[in-house]
Amino acid sequence: MSFEKVGFIGLGLIGGSIAKTIKKKYPDTTLIATARHADTIQEAHDFGTIENDTLLPLSDFADCDYIFLCTPVQQNLIYLKELKSVIKPSCIITDVGSVKSDIHKAVTALDIEANFIGGHPMCGSEKTGFFNATEYLLENAYYIITPTAKTAPAQLEDFHALVKSLGSVPMILDYEKHDFATAAISHLPHIIASSLVNLVSDLDDEQETMRTIAAGGFKDITRIASSSPVMWQNICLSNQEQILKLTDCYIHALQNIRSSVADAKSDDIISFFRNAKDYRDSITTPVRGSLQKNYSVYCDLVDEAGAIATLATIMASHNISIKNIGILHNREYEDGVLQIEFYEEDALEKAVKLMEDNHYVVHRR
Ligand SMILES: NC(=O)C1=CN([C@@H]2O[C@H](COP(=O)(O)OP(=O)(O)OC[C@H]3O[C@@H](n4cnc5c(N)ncnc54)[C@H](O)[C@@H]3O)[C@@H](O)[C@H]2O)C=CC1
Ligand SMILES: O=C(O)C(=O)Cc1ccc(O)cc1
Image (tube, rainbow, N blue to C red; front, top):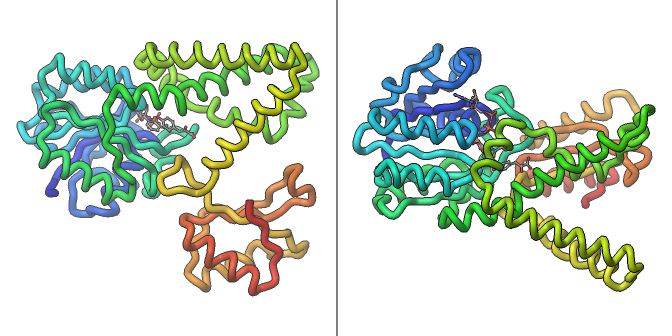
């Protein structure tokens, strides 16, 4: 695997995270980028991630070994067409878009199948922009790779190795299969989250009773409604067929549970919740490559000044990096607990032992 120059078109949460990770793992690689706003490029240059400090014309990407398309999915299609006449013969254009069929069809129509490998890192969040990009976002996340019929095996192997070296877990998948699966586990959930928020917003009273009492469950299930509207508009338009299929299935499922409630079918209602709980509990178990793994523990708050600093010092003196630390108040922990999040499972296990040795009351869930 050898590459000297990598280009990014779009440098937000995902493009920025990939660029920061490549810069960290391959400091000698030249990275260039262009985006919609000059500020983004200036910020990434000042951060030390990319070479250029102004917006670049696409002709400047001519000697790139890899070009990552990291704008909203429909915008990626426009850049793909423009890049056809720019790239060198050995260049691989890849994308990070949440939908794959559209771009694969465009690649075939443009007759550039030998120069394209699709990609989709299964990580991210509701946040946007280079500012929120991190060099650990990709870590342990599945990174779906969708080759074309004309992808050279050696180039696929190289790209697979690159993805792995960035800390992700590469998974090769057929692009149509990808679009059905992501419609179910990502696209429909985003539609449901946003429709639920819109419903509450429409039904709330003048005193905003619903907004005021919105509890953990509502906030958990609707976090992703804060995602970029443009990005999700693009995804809905690109993956229209699969999203329609899944939405119909979901409407049917809602009608079923509605009937069970209307007819007071207690057995059906309990099965509905039991089945969901069993499947959901099986997903919670930390497995390699899950979306946004969270290695958190909770400990009872010691009510004295400097309690957080003391704990942070204990961790630091044992070389354990803390990703996040803060006080959590919810129904489960009425008096509040300290939530400490780590980057990896090993660190979490070490930290739990240390905290217990230091007589902290530790909760895991
Ligand atoms: N946000 C997430 O959690 C994930 C997003 N993706 C995919 O990654 C891609 C990028 O998403 P994010 O990085 O989250 O978005 P973002 O909003 O953080 O960044 C988008 C970038 O594209 C640029 N951009 C937008 N419109 C443009 C245009 N017309 N011309 C040039 N540049 C333009 C912006 O300047 C910005 O640099 C999308 O295709 C999305 O489907 C994939 C996995 C996860
Ligand atoms: O915020 C979350 O949990 C996400 O679901 C992030 C996400 C958004 C889009 C994708 O294509 C993949 C992952």
